[in-house]
Length: 122
Length: 143
Ligand SMILES: Nc1ncnc2c1ncn2[C@@H]1O[C@H](COP(=O)(O)OP(=O)(O)O)[C@@H](O)[C@H]1O
Ligand SMILES: [Mg+2]
Image (cartoon, rainbow over all chains, first blue to last red):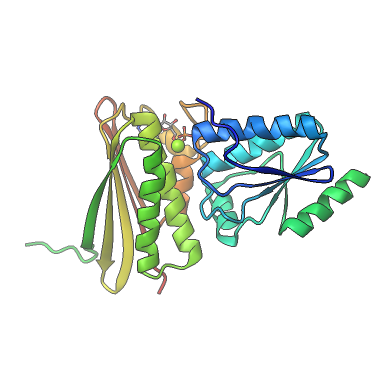
């Protein structure tokens, strides 16, 4: 079973903004990835920002879903920026040996938007 | 009677079932609450909670059901949280490989065991093929 629409996706110009605030269960994660990719196509989005400031735990399962989503978006030509990762989450992921590949990262939403603008200009 | 010098005393004990994906969150929240109650800092709390998430998910994904035993523990002056995960699932065939990291029979990251081991102060695993797996972790509060 795949659950769609649980994680809202907002549009800001040619950028999509989504905030992961709930548990990414298997069914929710799949729906989220499909929703993001569909929105990228429909909105012709050039960048995707995923706000994870609300996540106090990012285990290898959630990290994989986030990185996968970024790699999927990249196949459609869209760069993904994770914003708002908490200090203790960053420390924990690195200590576990996790390498987040396929996504950029920025401190907050403003920095994320600035990063996407810079990437777009290249 | 032989009293071990580093005997760990259990101050509280709570047993929680693991039998669904939801239990990953339920057990993790309960462990976080213990860490917070005991005044763990954000980093120690995240480390313990993340390791709990990995190991609870392992029970769910690889063994389908089991239990988590949450304890507040004391050892001399130290206070800590111990979580024991027990299941009667298939057990781990090649424990060394599973602990080395990057190995998975579920085609996932393979970072659950190796990663959680790095996040805690004590890590003990016992697994027998066909009988099940027990993993015990302890995180001490920094003085
Ligand atoms: N509770 C368990 N029961 C049976 N096998 C397990 C258990 N926990 C871990 N394993 C085995 O060890 C491997 C590595 O586990 P882990 O490091 O968590 O990676 P992953 O869960 O991503 O596969 C698993 O793929 C599985 O084969
Ligand atoms: Mg695992």
